[in-house]
Length: 100
Image 1: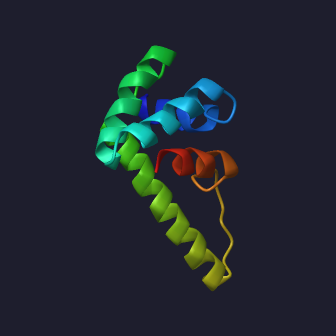
Image 2: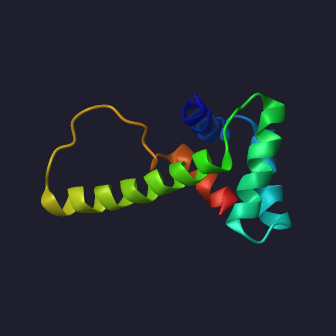
């Protein structure tokens, strides 16, 4: 459930200005990613999202792996099959840009 919640939060940042402001404030007020993640996870609960810092770190790792997979895919000329959460779509990119 918490992985679904972080994915929903990432997508909702584009539709809910208060969530985008939460990310901007955390970036402004905290120097480390760990502090930012802790703050965002805590504050997100006020908006009905349930995820942990570990969930955020996992999502960030999946995003980085997805970027690598896309690069490898482009080099190999293969075809991706199946449905997965796209960590490199515009919504996701905006989320990580606001937070990191």
